[in-house]
Image: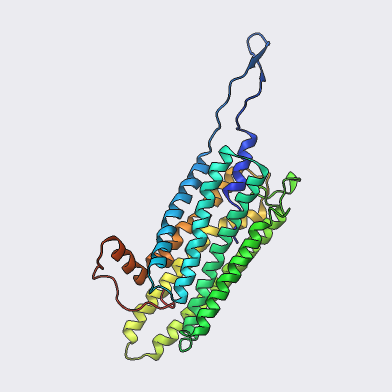
Length: 331
């Protein structure tokens, strides 16, 4: 599951580097006499925070393009595009949250701001992961119930699923503000302050469960695809190539998802706030990169979105873009 990212972690840096407007005493080595100074020390900006802010900017730009394409193209209203749009909104909020966290951490560092920033990141990244799961479920249903998939019931089911996802994620994002934080007990903090160790473990275990469910669904998708290929004897050679390509794509999707999120999920389970913060940053950055990759996997690879993007930018569609209608089962 998604966790509070740089918003919580970068607060720890403030313990070692912050604006110093008070008078400090230093011991002069030569004469052992106290030296008084009122110099203001500059804030040391962590390069990890800069990297997270840059990643957030890239995430925001990519997903803003996806949302704009879906909003201004009336033909892209099928259930799978609703889910892609919901995923893009979640990733956009995650990117904006990373940017906001960077700004607020070094300009307005208060308890309320910390809790709001962490809540936004929890909600956004949770919605991102759950929307990926919803897309996986949608692809499975489009193959398992191929004859009844394109019905009003499917559209209703999709909207209900999206609404439930966002209600759950908003509730998760509000938890830090409602008191589920470690600001009053630093010893109970997880690797992502101010999230408690217990809450971080619950989120991480939930993520592992979601990943296992995705693996099971994609395994079923592969089985159904191979069964379809065997049933169509006339197109056996074509279907074999297509199915092999689809399985390779599914494997790439799962591997990418695991590489991005698994290190941070496992680290959140075994570590706590006493561990060096460098390890937290090293696992968080790949997790945020998941939102950079999502638009490429789920949006920009789609021929319908590609056509809309080319029309918006150039007014034409390249001949190498497939004109075959895209379905949810395509990967």
